[in-house]
Image (cartoon, rainbow, N blue to C red):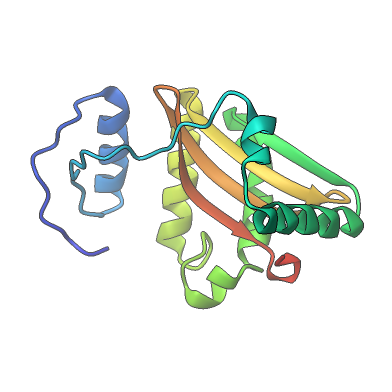
Length: 169
């Protein structure tokens, strides 16, 4: 990791302290940069109405990708939030990550041992705090994609996502 100059730490929450301690133990420099812009967009409450306002091209692309995925087989999604669930789901992450385009670029979860340890420790710590969300997409029970999120104060922060290259849309 590159070392950056950051302003003084602004967040003294237990969550922040635990993450910082984990990174420190792994030997990674830490800090926090304060950005005044919102890190997320609020979606409208009426999703069908929101969908209708999308461009024709975007709706067509969404429909085509959905139909293409459905032709592949039975689609299922696992939502894992507890430590024991995440432990059982971790081999799926390793399997997907080793077949993703990020693996060849050296940026996948399993490309380097320290990175693997970081994501696993962070996810298990967040699960212990009831703040983890691991989503695994499967086709015919075969894992093809995952997303690692941390939930803090009702905001879902996406940390990492990967998919098996063969299933690229």
